[in-house]
Length: 420
Image 1 (cartoon, one colour):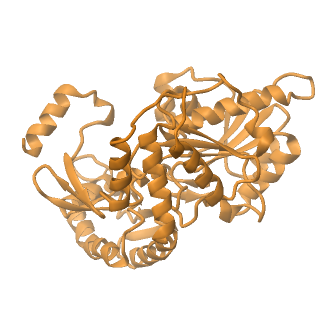
Image 2 (image 1 turned 30 degrees about the vertical axis):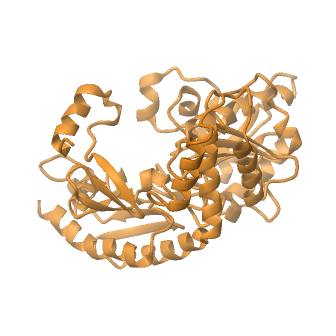
Image 3 (image 1 turned 180 degrees about the vertical axis):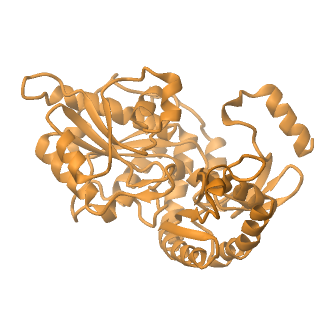
């Protein structure tokens, strides 16, 4: 096998550079660790950006995917398989979805949010405004991230992602997560409100207290859908099947929920859950679809993931180890605010000066990016979501002892970065 430098050179020669230059070539993984092409081992504190919920090569996941690969891999959407039926049943059960709810399977979070956008458009036609015109507006939040396809990108707030591809599909208004903005903007021209209960790409920020409950009440009163994007926060990542559960009144449920990332445990799977028979009837035969959605391999991976999360009490582990990790991090000199939702953790670093915060060092790299690089040298994988913000989203199987190895190494990592 070629060494890492040779492989990275070949990457630049053959692959489109939309991801920038990758820092590592990873060749294997086991549990919470991965190994690169040079044989170096790392503690994976990112899990493929909140994807590998069961870590790497979990026996139950490997067995399920291997057995399915040996039986039936793909059948198209002209047919179905037992796996898609069983995984849909499981999703509806664990999330507590109301009677008459349904599931649509896709391949990614972007695809799931595209389906939700189309659901909003259909709702806008089925429930017109006071003048009889279709509702065409969707409200999304500032600092939101819902994907990079043209529809999901129009829901995403970050200008750097949006501007190179404008004009995007029209009708999306981005508002701050305040009661005042929601009250003002949510009129009878709005077909849906879409929110992330925890904004992961923005640095792991939860919604203001009471905001999601208010959104639920106002959408019901004013005839709009409430769509909750749980692509990053769902499937046990925050210690619950849905992060929204802790923010909604007991017995309340969104009109639609989107999933991906942790749902497949490493296999590409996305899903949209439509709550109740009325919302589920908005999209009929031929109005949406995808060739690979619900394919047997993906369904086997998803079912193994969700079942193992249940059987191994990994939602409890996410809450307990996440709380332990956050508390330990708050004790590290140089660490500021720590925002923790299960095993989705945002860490703000204390900048020593303005230059350090924005563009520290002769390299010109933001401080957090340099910490990520130094941590990688020390054997830890994490990422930065801002100039001084780190994101941790390790596999949900991680132990407190494994998490502690990072906390104990972090002071030296920070010292190394500031010394350069």
